[in-house]
Length: 324
Image (cartoon, rainbow, N blue to C red):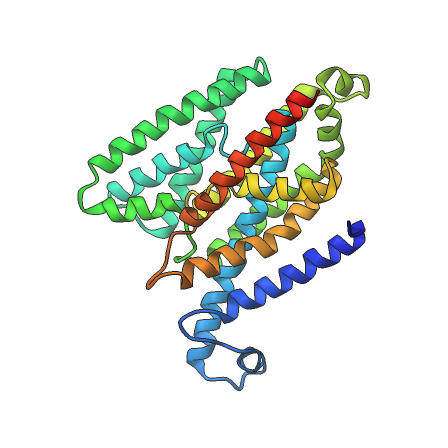
């Protein structure tokens, strides 16, 4: 097996390559010379416009990947469950309801959808937390129940959406086709705040993985830690969903890939998951843009990748349980 610093170097190199491929690949190919020409100001305006669109789209995909992957790390440690993901407490279902309502009421501008999705997601987490704050198990059940209920509400809204059906469905499936610099800025600031909180608490999450009794023995206020982690992950996930729609399995695939490579220490897993997001998300978005005429929703591709990965984790967990 490669040494840890070698793995870090490979992650960084892969991220750079994926980023460059993301901004240079599409219906119009842009090579390194054109990119350098845009930077130096000698390239034609239409090339600069294409590069500008791809750049903001690629950056947004990375920031969404950073938010979802770091949230996935935190939720798996909080629930001590390797199958937990950022959507487990109903954030995506709440955001979908808010976005669908904004579209169906004729307020379907990009900013209005973002605001409605974000507010609805935060309200959902607030309700879930108050319903299940007695224990982690109760919180998990409350999240599943709320997600199921809100999925039903979203289905009802889709059923009555009429001419807005396509817009609602396309938003729910997730993607970066409507990326703009405002979304990039929002996602950057939100990711910076949320990831900082998770990184600050990474050693506490390590202690929590060993059990609440162990966490208490090293002086950790468990209830305060739960509130901070839930608030940070809810904020990160709500930001990610509001700017891109629902992109599933990212918070499951990236953290577990890094666990296979680096072990269980959150002080390592969270930063490496962030690095891997630089590779994974631009690659998925590039496939979404070139796989078919037009483009595929990114959420469709991550679901196709994530379902087999989820089954693998289930089987791996079963074998580990039998071996104990």
